[in-house]
View 1 (tube, rainbow, N blue to C red):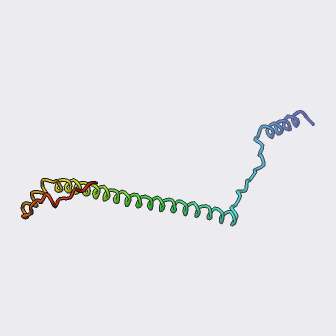
View 2: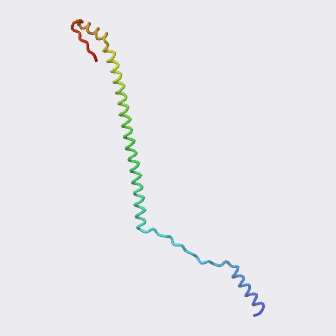
Length: 120
């Protein structure tokens, strides 16, 4: 080969070496979801939603029960106050002096021989 032919051959070789080599394209396959996996995912999601609904429903029931308890306690406190007020009123009305005055108004007299002492 002549010198010129060798130069052309070397240039081709250099161009081939310098040109970017095409690397083989690697295609990755996406893993498809099987029907069994879809069923398991659907089952898991439905159980999760059902559990969440159950928790919310139970919380609501507890809230309602607490409200009823508070209303009942308020009624009990009100009745206790009314009872204590009535007890104080009974104590005031059952004094010896008041009973004696009412007896005199009704025309009753005190007979010392007919009085019996009651002890607690």
